Image 1 (cartoon, helix red, strand yellow):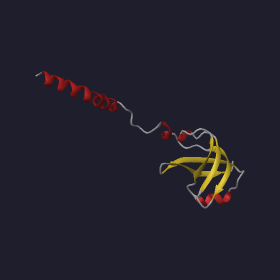
Image 2: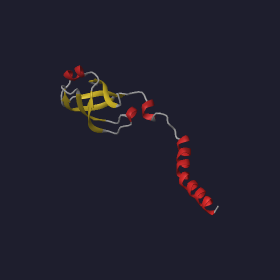
Image 3: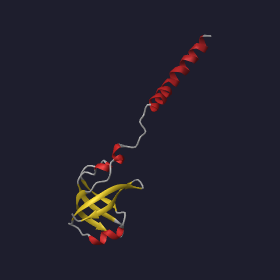
Image 4: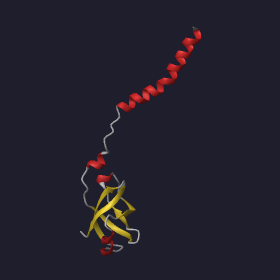
Length: 112
């Protein structure tokens, strides 16, 4: 009987972390991040590089609130590559970004 009690106690101790983990998962908020609930808004940026072949533009931009990104310089894919022919390095632009297929993407770019 002593061995049965010891075995029961050992099993209870071994199962406890899994039970706590399952309980903590029940209370987790599985809603999308707040950033995805914000409407895309134009962001001021400066073009640092244009790669028409790859369909990308490198921008020095302000904070992108709807994507939760701080101000930085970064290359982005452009939803419509044809728009890149209208811009060159050094241009100041107003850019709208959104999440397209899981990637931060330029969905609109205009001169201010």
